Each structure stands twice: as C-alpha cells, then as structure tokens.
Amino acid sequence: MNIVRPYIIVLALIINLLSIFSILCNLYIRQNVLRKRDFSSTAISVFMILVPITACLFCLNAYNSTDIEYAYSIILISFSVLFFALIQCFFSYVKNVENTSLDVIKAIVGVLEAGDPNLDGHSLHVQSLTMLLYEYLPFSYKILINPSNLKCASLLLDIGKLGIPRSIIQKTGKLQKEEWDFMRRHPEIGVKILKPIPSLTEILDWIKYHHERVDGTGYYHLSSDEIPLESRIIAIADTYSALTMSRSYKASLPHEEAVSELKLSAGTQLDKELVEIFCSIPLRRLEACMKETLKTMKCYDEENFRQDIRQNAQVLKEN
Image 1 (cartoon, helix red, strand yellow):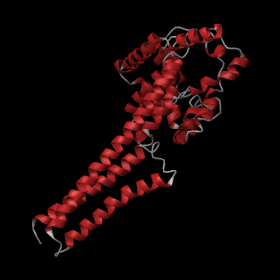
Image 2 (cartoon, rainbow, N blue to C red; image 1 turned 135 degrees about the horizontal axis):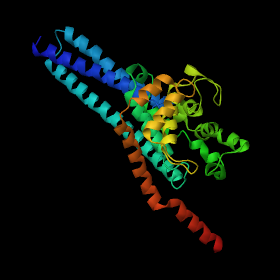
Image 3 (tube, helix red, strand yellow; image 1 turned 180 degrees about the horizontal axis):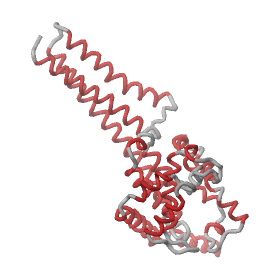
Image 4 (spheres, rainbow, N blue to C red; image 1 turned 90 degrees about the vertical axis):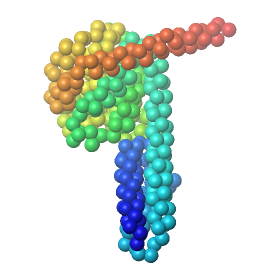
C-alpha cells in the first residue's frame, strides 16, 4: 500500500469528524431556526449527519484495505474538504438569516418604543444588558442556555405592552389598582402575541415569567429554580435598565445606586448568584450598552415616525 495513503485517509477521517462536530454544534445553537418540525428540515439534518459518518466508515475501510487505489484516497479527501466547506457555508447562511430576522425585530421594537417616555429604548437596552450578563456567566450556566433564543427573548420581553392601553403605559403618576392589574398582564399578552410563531415556542415561558420573584411572590408564584434560568437573567437586566433609564414618573439612578438596589433585591426579587455576577461587570461595559441604545433610539426619534403618522392621519381626517 502506498505509504502516503494512510496519512491522507487519516486526514480525511479527521475532517469528517470535524464536520460531525460542526453539524451538532450548529444544530444546537440554531435550533430556533432549524426546529425539525417538518420532513424537509429533518431530512436535511439526517443527511448532514449521515454523510460524514458514512465517509468515516469508508475511511476506516480504506485504511485497512490493500487493494484500494491511491486515486480513491485523493477523491475521498477532496470530497471531505468540499463537504466540510459546504457545511460551513450552509450554517453561515442560516446565521445570516437569523441575524437579519433579529435586526428586523429590533428595528420594529425600536420604532414602536420611540417617542414613548416610559418605553423609549428599554427593550433594546435590556437585550444589550442580557447578552452582556450572558457573556460573564460561568460555563456551567452557559451550556444550559441557547444564546440566540436568549437574545430574541430579551428583545421581546415587553411586546405584550402593545395590548395595554396607551393611557396606562404613558401615565406619569402612580397606577391605580385596576390599571396595575392591566399592566401586570403584559407578559401573558406577550405570550399570546408570539404563540402563533412556531420558532419562538421555546422562549414563551421565559417572557411569561420574567417578572417572577425568586421568593415566590411574583405574578405566577414560582420560586427559585422553578423560574427558568433565562427569565432570571432577563429580570436582572430589566430591573437595572428600569432603574438607570429616565421615565416620565421618575429620574434615572446613577450606577452605584442602581447596583445597591439590585443587591437589596437579591434573594427576594432577583436571583442572588446572578446579581453578584452582574454587579461584577465593569462599569464601562454597562455604560457602553446605554450609549449604544441611546444612539440607536436617537435615529428613530430624529425620523419622528409617529409624528408623521399622526400628521398624515389628521390630513386624511380633514379631507
């Protein structure tokens, strides 16, 4: 047997094993895009796994064979390299589709919140803070979380406020009991809005329970680990954002005071361990989240979409 051939076959085997590893990692990370709910997506997933496995078996057989032609080995490694490249291109395309979808959602949420003194950029800020906190989580937590889904859930946490009367959302004073009863339903309303979208099924509970308290006195009376980890992460980002962003009924708090409030809420409202991790994040990273949010919202405010809509509606009414 040609002495070069074993090394080529081993190289092909390694490439195919890398292909399998890449497929499994990408399928896990992008499971919100490839949900395997229909025959076509299932067939694609099975095919992507079976091809490199078959190639691996062929490699093992070729390595022990004495009569295989050297040209077959060249063809094998060429195929392996090509298939690995195709896999990377496929998942790169999927990632681009996913990022584009998130960017579109982000733009829509930004426009909806623009000009609203009690929402202005809040969801975008929460998303930035959530992903920053995820970055600082220990590996034992990260392995339990799909970052793509977390990014989407943290952006859509307040989508249910679309179902709350504007008079309540924009109220400058303290809410009455009836108004508060309306307001506290926004997680439930958000779930109803997003439920028809199959790819968002996994994040519905995270949105629904993001106002739960770890002491069990929240909206649905879940406590500690009964609350999804992702909800507990979003809750901290949501609380910090609410404390540090200006509202029509309150001034923003400086970082030091906001951190103190978080620590006071640790163990009752918020997850104590996650609060400790959040409070360890450098101030410059937190300030960068705020600056990016303000920069994005400034673009929407300058365009003044809502004002244009109101003016056009008034013109139509007059005509």
